[in-house]
Image 1: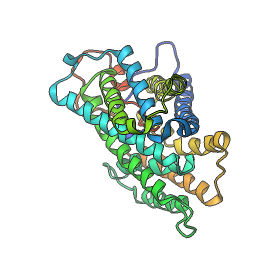
Image 2 (image 1 turned 90 degrees about the vertical axis):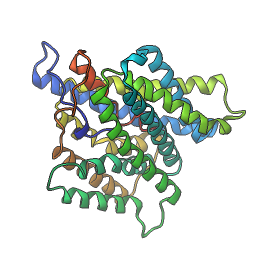
Image 3 (image 1 turned 120 degrees about the horizontal axis):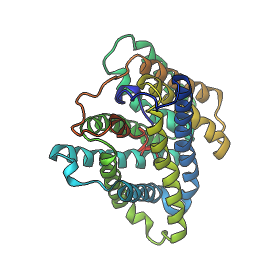
Length: 326
């Protein structure tokens, strides 16, 4: 889940790979990343009946945090005091993103919830530096009206509130990720923020898991945590090596449309003409706003002498994705 204005410019294509081939490969990786994020979200929905919404979100983050701690093994000396605190705050925001989105898709179709959640990164792009974005704001506004269809009163207002709360968390997530990515190299920041998110989520979810948790559902959630967000992290890391920041962000703007498609195929959530057009307008607004506001350089270069591509890898799916989003 991300916008171009918050990814450093990727390094040159891997050696021996032509620019066009690298771009094609990066595009396929980006699409695969978004697809696994949304597929993971769709496959999570049936677990709500077993673990509850909060328990499902919490278990997924806990497993993702454990795997990242084992693989990355962050060290305290990798961070200055304020940078470490920023990673902790990022973890709290990631927890909110995961939990609110899970609560939203428990009440709304996946495509609708994803498009509403995407208003967070879209707002960051629309209100960032640049001009000529009024048309994209209007397109996004029309998209929201068509998604919610207030004249029918058919959208669950609580689900709508949860989706918009997830959007706010995603916007904050992007801004904090930009700061962490500029200050901390590699995946160390992510290996701190995701475990923090897991702890916060489980503190919220623990009362709902009483008598529900067993090894079977726990292992299923481990598999879902690998499917998303861990696999998308790896795919986006590789895609960022092959695509320009602007191209990558434009590609990510297609995620609500992918969510709509997966909702139809996996969850049999067939949208009406109005919501489908609303998703199309939100995607169009995302593409337009992102193309006009790419951020080509980090504000401050990483302190470490590690390769620049590792700095780029710190920018996780806007999903932690955490599905991040779920």
